[in-house]
Length: 365
Image 1 (cartoon, rainbow, N blue to C red):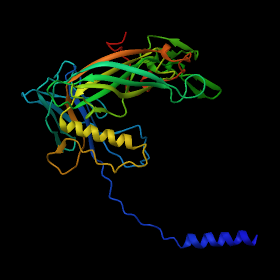
Image 2 (cartoon, rainbow, N blue to C red):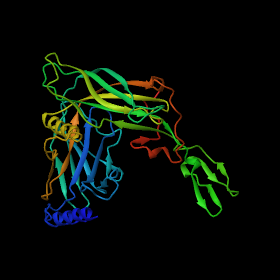
Image 3 (cartoon, helix red, strand yellow):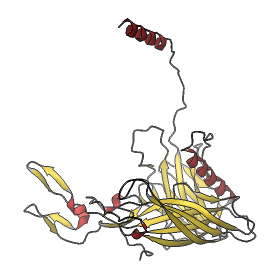
């Protein structure tokens, strides 16, 4: 007992000799962030406006602080312009039949916030682009029966550059899959038990007798979500003297009850970049790869190409322009080396899935 008391007193004495460190940190500023681009593919094109958040913020990390009610105008070097429409909180789009990017032309956006502050992006020229010549994938297995955490497909691409041009290229992956949900099965608890409480978009209602009754077609049961590459794949010194880019890793698609409900469509887009945009995405790639490395180098701020016109606010993000050529393949659920399990019975609209649409994509077959 004496020995225990001695150690307790010793720890208390040592702890009392430690002075607290007073570290002053700069005041956080909610900076405007711009995320958008235009390509040679048909529109609509999207520009997102939101505000940065402090580390450790108590808000949901999956939700952005949207910058609403802004005015965004897309302009080119030929005098054409188009006013974007806010289609969601902080999400602004051109019309599908509106402006379209052309190789050789330059583009920029002008932004006016509801408080009168104005911003402008540096004009970006659309450079010629090569082609995606091949897509390959391999199944990566986790551990345990059935669908496992970490199961999925690693996706690789081959591409070519443009002869006689210094190629700055991003290979962008977009994976699309089909899901089904069951919003008509939602219930709510009342005195005496649970009763049906279907979502209005499910095509069902609760009738006077408290039972499910179908009154129309479901508008939110089938959706097609998209998965994007988390780390941008960019071409630098790996381009050889004959402008061939081989076996570049472009992304990972998880194999789950949801993604392999039917099949997955993998699209690889080769996007031509300007030198400035190439450096921006190279820095993004370096920072994202360094997140899992304890020896990561100090991070540099991603300022991008947006400048303030009537204020001194420092803006983050980028509006860029790119020539695009794409290639796509489908991965069937039978590619998984075991019998896939049926989809979960999710009692919510299918738009619950991120980056999803309930409209049948034109490419889906």
